[in-house]
Image (cartoon, rainbow, N blue to C red; front, side, top):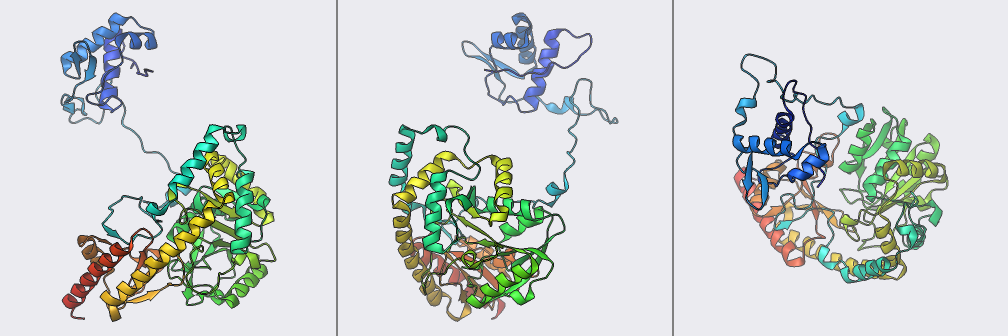
Length: 497
């Protein structure tokens, strides 16, 4: 065991007293936990270059003081119950610590970037207050993931790993994965790209961060859909940008209301988050023309377009871009697993080199093993088979959700964004206190998530919620909506509406 113990300067004191004080501070600071075994005296003596008898004397002193416990034949351990720390507190009436005590920690001076960071994660981690019927958005069905195929490919690659998987890889990503993804995006999303155009990233959140790093200076204006994805908003705010909310209607973002000074506009055209509106063909052309005229860059977040249940498939906005104004991003988190942290970015040629350099500075590259496995997963047809299967699974869950809302909420509810994706937006026009409904639903075992957090400005007066249905099976969806129906009925009865 490596041993790092500070020997404080205590003039006139013998070595064993200094060592005892260093160990005492380490115990009180939590570097050695109650019940933890201390290093052997020979190891400490060898590491510090002192006599073993000096270490024995220090251990004996701390044992006498109650900090250590010696167990015959087992070693020396930190006492389960530490002595009262009061004697090490500052002396009454003075502002100075007692002699030999460590100085109090001073707060760090934060940068402007650090001061702009949100106080907590916009999206809490999985398992955080998980409820039996949680309509949390964005979590795929773990039970449906083709684990056997993924395990087999991983084992095959690890049995004979090529040298390029064991060292540092290219910042843009493995050529095999970029090639496989480029072919998939060309045929399924109409994206104009080759393997050389792609950058593999740690999920779409890193894609947004990289785009912000190379496009924005503090004070630049970013136009965002209102309501819009809060994870993107926090990235742009952390970069020092001014967020300009732009209204969304049934055809998507209202291009006529975009500010001329915007340096960037962030959109989710295939399935607007959270309303589910689809950007119309006319609006798409209008948005591209606006970007060409103003010199702005469009960030297209294509976060869940793989799942569409009505109408013909929609091509990506990037595929219509003739002027190189669109940065296209996508993720595997909704299709496969969030834990893989695999996403992709297709910048226009003018931005590719800068984004690749920023990626290198951030983390060099995404885990090469996961990249290699995903490349094989796509090339051997597993990915598109899984995607076809999940479309059927989510289509059934969507139908059950919509029919359950009709049965249990009826005219009290309005639903938006039902044609694609893995969530809908539920509006309750008669409810003006969304927090009360969320808390009552939670007491009933139902996870309900307000859409109000997705507004940069004042949210509407009536309650609205994002209902994700991908991680719940059909019976759970039915029961969860039934419980929610009873919660809303009780709320309306109590409020007399």
